[in-house]
Image 1 (cartoon, helix red, strand yellow):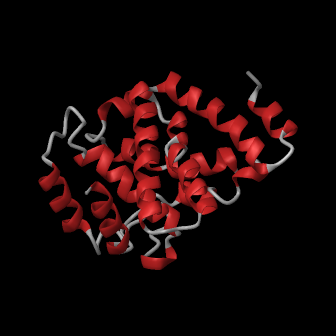
Image 2 (cartoon, helix red, strand yellow; image 1 turned 60 degrees about the horizontal axis):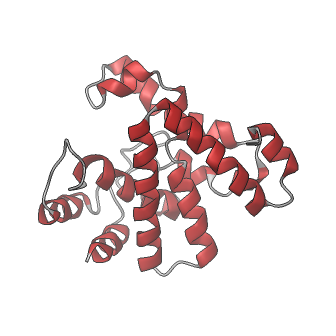
Length: 198
């Protein structure tokens, strides 16, 4: 397997570089935390479903897929002791955790092939009502890819009926998403996701 630096230097074009970099970063995430690795894959699956339902262009769907699979790459910088306590964090631990959006962006900032996906990773914890982080962006000022990842991330992390600790029926999950529509999340993205769930 190529090193991350070799992948960046050897990439003939953006697509090839991403095909080399993503598996390396995903392996690091897997070594850090298997649940985080599985979560990343699932968020990517949901994000693609949403983007396809919204009839976005194929190249944009692919950008969203890659950003979604790497959305938590910044958590490589978060101590395991902090991750193990989620969601019950002290104020200091919360600050360390919240920095993962900026940390993930910083990891990718010198890789030309990643420039278009960096905003999606940096802003996936922003909220439609402007109460998110790290920049308190509001509404359409949040990149669409980040808005899509936010819904997919919330669903998988907190209300996915398939996760062990947060078992909810599909009906309850849909109701919770709708309850957050227009406040935490873009209502059009929530609608597309609910529609994609069938």
